[in-house]
Amino acid sequence: MRETTDDRRCLELEDRYAAHNYHPLDVVLSRGEGAHVWDTEGRRYLDFLAAYSAVNQGHNHPRIVAALIEQAKTLALTSRAFHNDRFGPFCAKLAALSGYERVLMMNTGAEAVETAIKAARKWGYERKDIPDGKARILVFSGNFHGRTTTIVGFSDGESRHHFGPFGEGFQVLPFGDLDAVRAAFDENVVAVLVEPIQGEGGVIVPPPDFLPGLRRLCDQRHALLICDEIQSGLGRAGALFAHRLAGVRADAVTIGKALSGGLYPVSAFLADDEVMQVFTPGTHGSTYGGNPLACAVADAALDVLVDEELVERSARLGERFLSRLRAIDSPWIAEVRGAGLWAGIELLPAAGGARRFCEALRARGILAKETHVHTIRLAPPLVIAERDLDAALDALEEVLGA
Ligand SMILES: *Cc1c(COP(=O)(O)O)cnc(C)c1O
Image (cartoon, rainbow, N blue to C red; front, side, top):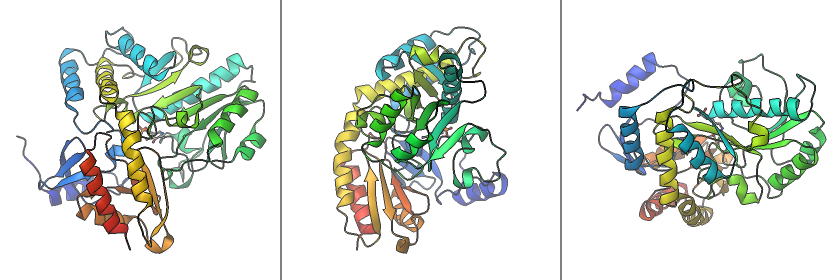
């Protein structure tokens, strides 16, 4: 056993030596299993954040852990300068599952989004004959697509403040507003980049005609519809991809987070030949992208998703979850939004912010994190036992009830 450092010391060291770029809840975790995590004193919690939905398969899933250990002992990294025996088979599995012809593997979500931006622009210049340097991409207010300088350049709030100057070629439009999208379209628009349900924005579900409307506009104007499913995808919203709930098919998709079940950073950009074939040797890449360890871990994580029917489980448990949340009789709740095992509880200003409710939930053994001051976001691992889900709902009723 390694020596453990006590709670207070961990907090002190972090405060003293780590960058202050997060504001964590006051709990120091040291172990996880399934939907549960334990703090250094052995207290058990239900994890209702699931690492921003990276842990949909549950903490330390034994099948994924076994794949990780086995592959780490065999071959971890070759770079794409050589072939490796895990890469092709994994891409084939992901293509078959997702219904896209090709896969480009990266590591973090932000890199997958960067890949999408590069693909869309190159496609625009080479397939649509847009004048070089003029490609435009339409995005939406309240978006979260990652933390690179390009990406924060088209986000809002503190994630972009004082990080400029920013690149050009993005226009931010109100989320859910089709008229604004129609008006913003011109011949240089190569893509619309959208989260089908905004995660960091507070689990914002757009009006039902929004995604179908974007699909139609993209078809009419010969632009790509790109869905960022890094948080909403792989079962979280009760579907493999949340945009499919609206009955549309995106031209390209970014995934990450749960693609590895939380064991390793793995992300991917998915598209058909027409888009993906704009990349030729030397035009894009990543040292770790597509490495054998990533492929082995993600391969096992996808098997778990399919074999344990986690997408269906999310849809089924999600119905009960959301209907019970919506039935809470509370003086504080303005609105409950969500899909699948994913909810945003928007509080009234009089509630004084979501943080104190998250602290109260923590005292009852449930870890949730506020987003945007007034929203409690709930996103348990999709493997959560039904009785644990019910226990958490009881606690939420207590904390938020009249
Ligand atoms: C988390 C997230 C990202 C960024 O992923 P990282 O792995 O943190 O770079 C991008 N898009 C969405 C929708 C996300 O939720």
